[in-house]
Length: 488
Image (cartoon, helix red, strand yellow):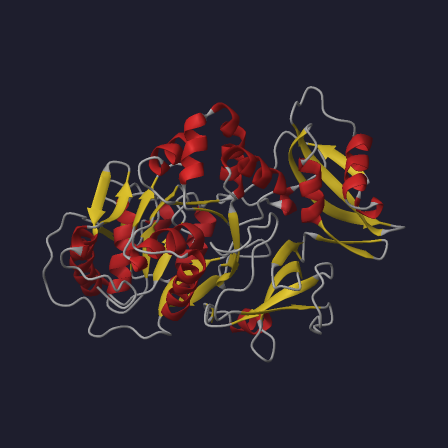
């Protein structure tokens, strides 16, 4: 296969497992043959344009992505749960030549105008080489669309250089080898589930087992059947933490795993501690974005500190800056600043948006993440939230919503919690908590929760207002949608 997937396609490596989705599986040799055959068809149908992939959690999605990359083309993953207007915008903006889909998939009207190519995982190999020459490091591998919280989604153009750099840096941090078997149930239209969760194992010559749909039963089954690593998001680990007390099989599965990784949002410290207490294993976190892929990670041989995302990965430069853009000179674990990063892991720009691209970078090439953090003297980073939604300026203090949310989750009467800031004539902003009660019929008193936070953090960080809600709004990756929080 290519420089992106450097595993030889001949025995004995060819016989090693590569992909498994439910009962359907391919070895590395079978994947290479299927991808090569499909790549020939893609090149004939698409020429040199972009290729959309209908990214359902099935074997065909993984094969289609590998084949398009082998053909030297850029992949546009499509979220099957996107609405008509969002799909229409993405397709009009990226203008793919065709869409790859599993046979039998019903595509919505927004996609029906595209030429369709069904992915046949059993097609015999043959035909001319997929690409005339190996694509360059700066050639695009993906166009991944951002969530669009402040306007229509933007297409982040991710070069092959960023993919290989990130996956190799994670291999260094996590001691990731071809002997590892990764299990996850993440969506395949996103960086986490697709690039890290599928391409990561393939680049190492290892295997991935996708659950199709996340379940604690599936996690226990696969980890007890030889899988060594688990990727998940906080919602998944919360469900695992809830299930552990009554599930000794799950306890044993996590205890025997080599590495448990959480990403895409901060994992509450309360869930960290519950999992560690039950299994003796700590979940490690990493930090990345669509535009940057991965920036930091807790190393497999490092200290897994709950609430931190580790130090920068090899090759990544990271700094914190003040509101005026001045770099924070000394890191003390307390001073909050915006994260800026620079390195080979970054995207090349937003498709058709030179204005947005220019605004995302400083004059000397640092990417403005919009994420706020503190950094320890030894380099460990702790995210406190997004600049737009999670940094609260109250009474002259800069307060990160994340630490208040963690404190609230330590209260036995709280199942879920989100913290925002609201305008206040006296304080500038006041701290507001949105709480899902463990027992909706008997929620804790608002004053009790405020006192609980004040005792653990500081009085100025206590919620001044508490709203009890039946559920918190989240997206497909389990990320909290704070802009959707409204007073009932």
